[in-house]
Length: 110
View 1 (cartoon, helix red, strand yellow):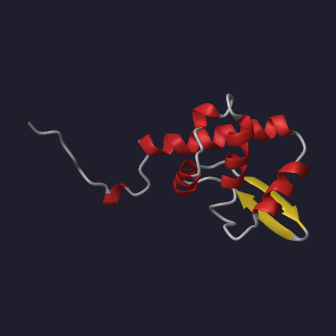
View 2: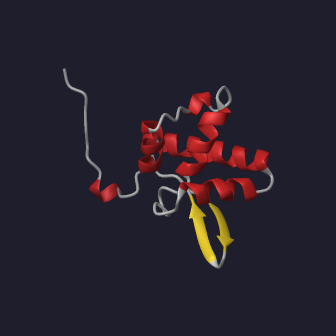
């Protein structure tokens, strides 16, 4: 989970990114990644709102909507959001474990 979107508004810096918790919240609200193309009017606002969950949970939805409307290059933005969501989903099966010393050994028996 490396990619981030950064911007500044009225002297405040915002860092938008996903983590697993943010994606879980989005999914509970009805987000389905595979439906981004089929249902963009529903999925894209949820995906953009989810970018704020990790670092800016206290931000009002009206501000989030305003930010989306003020961001230029929407097609690039949407592509970046899709990549970031995919990257977060891929982290569930990522073989790179951060702390090898604390890894748990497991085996299949039977």
